[in-house]
Length: 73
Image (cartoon, rainbow, N blue to C red; front, side):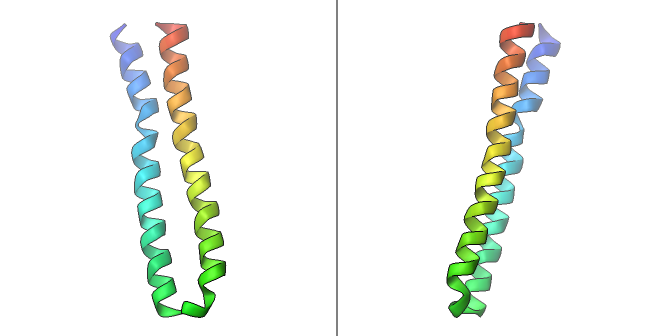
């Protein structure tokens, strides 16, 4: 049971990676908008797409962690 909990915890750690990725992307987007305010629309679209993809990886990791607990636990 211990190894299953460790595997589920490692799968759930994808949320940390997604959080760091989204925060870095937001930082760079704000910096880019500050440097070039007229490109606000394009930067925002790219930022939202990147954040959605990063959040999807966190959700996948969460679901895999739940599946590990349910089917192997």
